[in-house]
Image (tube, rainbow, N blue to C red; front, side):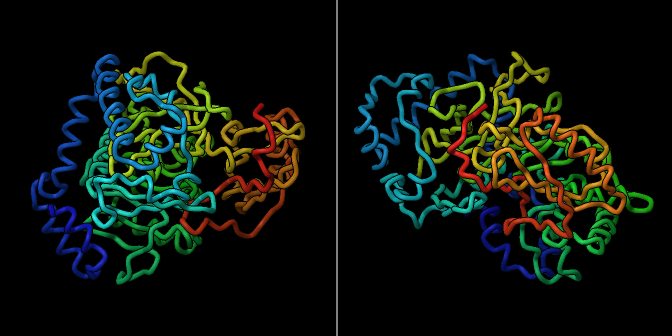
Length: 470
């Protein structure tokens, strides 16, 4: 086992007092020793293929697609049976364009038949067992090869390198991870081994936010890495803090939550650094991130193949992200419907010179980030982007819907908030949806994050699959 896997395996056993020594020793080692062969091999591949032509990339994608599909048909019981039922002729599968001949799968199938998705060449005890975050209220588990951990990290760092982030860059981490015990403050822990300043997103009170700012000024992390909801909370506090924050970040690496335009603009204004958004999921089928020249999501073609499917399962310009992973033949997921909504870029080329497929944006989830008009049509959360200073007077908000055409907007206000500002927000939202949704405002004392540290803006209580797409 390489050093990095040994470190990862024993990390939680290390007392906080030893991490400083371990960190100092760890970063004395050369990079290839620190991150292991899987990381180095993947990093080299990504550097060599990053600026290939579209035709060259298509060739590599076809090779990986054909391998995973034919492997699944030969070694995975579920695909053998399902492809037989659907009459799939493997001899007719020549390249990725033939993917439409294959049936899709979803979380319910994986949950119900998990063991049948496992390749007959692997044993569960030799693999990692992963579960999704359960943001839909029903998590699903699956197996992945152990090499996926550092292969995934290589892809993440490859994308973040566009923001100037390196494997040994320091980061302020605002995610739903448990704060390691043994530090001076239960809500803050600086990890010298990972070069991470971890701050508790479950207790972002004014008292703790001040402590976070003091810690930031002490440790001077280069990047913010976390959920946009938590980054927004910090930004709101920093803007109201006397003297602001005596530290500048190189960039903001936003993950795991849908990002609204007004959030991006506000955070960039407060911190004076660009937000780089990132898309990925626990199943590790599609990974994408922004580049230096654009806020569109560049899909990594050798990681997995991305389709957008409408509600009828047809490929579309806007639809559900449906992924086919190329990295995990232990439990291949082919044409797996993620529930996330996105749209393809309408621009032919990106100024950055990369030729991978690009998403114009990721709008959220079919069943989580949609509102319903009084006529029964969907409106995505992303469509409600409002450019107004009135939102600066809100700490955060939640949109609750249990009746078509009516949404309760729960507001956690800043001290400077007023009823006049609320009326202005209500008018802007109702104008945005052409009066098809009424927004009723309600002031609240708290809007807590979820058990995983993420924050959902939309609390949709309607059986949304009964309605139609506008």
